[in-house]
Length: 233
Image (cartoon, rainbow, N blue to C red; front, side):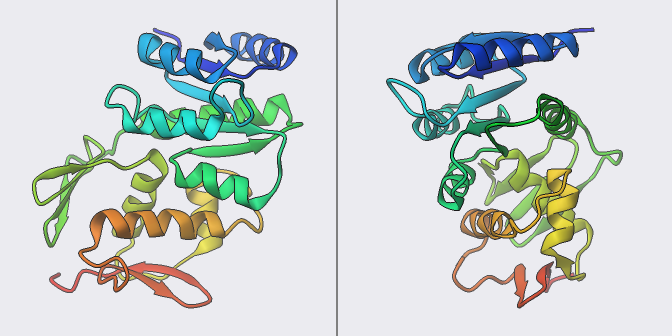
């Protein structure tokens, strides 16, 4: 059985060695880069299962690296967990808006980091038990392929965006609270970070709704959360 490979992009050698040691102790293969440009090059060459990406990097910072990864056909579907010493909300939101799948602030527990990596890989590699599709308007979701198309053209969704869309659709007509969505999709307590859900909902609307300012399908239930509606069903 092949091991999952994690690309660590961080300019602090002691942090890289700490992460590398603990990941390899937990059965992962690792590859390392110490600046943003090398990170992008290795992501394309190595095709890792997941990328740990530091925000503060030389040559090209983590936000620009994430942006480049998401624009490239070869790397856009690789899950990304951002690492940073910064704790301000704006940094978290920027990382999520650019397509990061998770976010952890230094100093962090290595045990927690390993748990998050495993959770992201489990979700990104899992397949639906059902062989089925769902469609609304000109949007088609293929649960087996984890693929979404709109007007017969593939819609590029991050892992979290896809998972959020799927859980909304599978609970069609039900109001899902933000805290529940955080717990189910992020897989751990993300207390107080409900803006994370709002950011991903906004991205889904921009990609799937005909008019994201006046959404028809993904409805906001003020003060509670979100509900998926399909007027045609």
